[in-house]
Amino acid sequence: MRSPEAINSRVLIDSDYDVVTTQFGMWIFIAMEMLFFGGALFLYSSERHFYPEVFAIGSAHLELGIAATNTAVLLTSSLTMALSVHFLEAKRKHYVVGFLILTAVLGAAFLGLKGYEYLLDYRHGTLAIVGYNPDFLAPKEVALFFSLYFLLTALHAVHLTIAVIWCTFLACRIGATKIYQESTMTKWRGPVDVLGLYWHFVDIVWVFLLPLFYLLGEGK
Amino acid sequence: MKTLVATYLALLLLLGLTLLAHKFELGPWNSTIGLAIAASKALLVAWFFMSLNTSSTSARLAAIGGVLWIFFFYFLGALDVFYRPAMPGSWWK
Image (cartoon, rainbow over all chains, first blue to last red; front, side):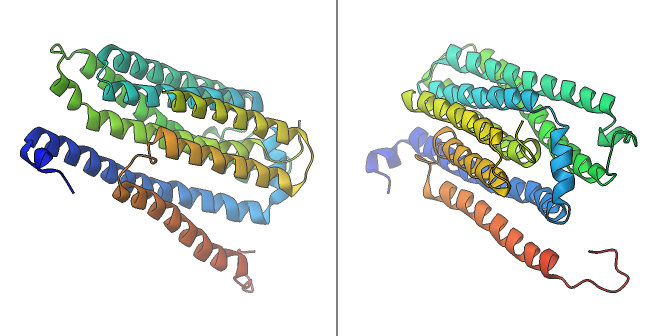
């Protein structure tokens, strides 16, 4: 229940309304995204149930070092994104823009490392999109693991690419705001909140992909 | 801000724990531990970084709803896939 002062203040009503409904809408979207990734993950679960040994063999061929580094990079990007939201609430424009740029750079670093990993997969003949090297795949059912690996990691990479472009765009827009006023920063609250929620969701997806693909089989 | 940094450090610690657990040969428990730590990391990110701790009830309901639908989806899907009897001549196992 809003206080009479808040009801009399149109700015506060609009601002409150905007944040609550925007966050709610974004969480509904994230719930749909969860089901979207859930479909592919269910396919993974059922195939792994039938071919557990094949998944363990496939997992041993992946680059755990790169994946662990990428996880640390993405977790760091989540912190910088959370800090940009924090400084937006404190109305510190330069910090907001700085942390948004840092977040985008970390996201791009993740994509660069992931691209390098795909290159290594290509050299090994295990990159699903260009076909498999039959000499490398033994047993041939390992192709099933690599297909699912590529499907899910590529879907994640597409999501992260969108987030990086969005983050860069928003940093430029906020950075270009000339008039530094309280109302000016308040209007960015919704867009930055939404981007933040999306970014963290993409981070969470990767957090699950790490044990599902890279940490199967024997310890190394 | 201190909470955000503390959450980040906890996440890095959990990542280290994930990699450490992988060094030990625990059979099927390796995967279970990896997923349990991943779920803990996801909870930390959702609660502190995604601000569910200060979000409105509607946002929290939408978040919980998403997780619940995943469980329904998995439960019903698993019933079908894992308990469907093999049909003669079917490609399905």
